[in-house]
Image (cartoon, rainbow, N blue to C red; front, side, top):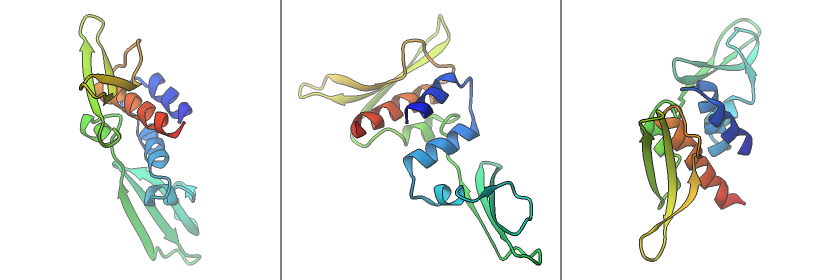
Length: 151
């Protein structure tokens, strides 16, 4: 998870490859993770292959005689582009904040556990340098919060 967080910190905008990595990390037993175990590139060669096409992970199986008896498409959430998608990464029951430093033009996010008095205790923070988009900031904070539960 730490390498994924570092990729997010280095990102300058939406990135479908990072979206894919997030989906696999947060749903390792899901259909998209299973699809990506096969060869990448929809080249019509015999066997299973996959790729990202228009926001979806497409999986195809070709036979030796060139037929395609199986194909499937799985919508890939746009975590790095969409605040709504990024919010699905926030663990249930936690609060979140998102703000912008308008002078320096960057975004900060925090995922918080509320203590007994209702005060937020940050368990996932996007960092002091800020991030170029609100979705990236939320992704970083949410994945850090998820990481705190697995340590």
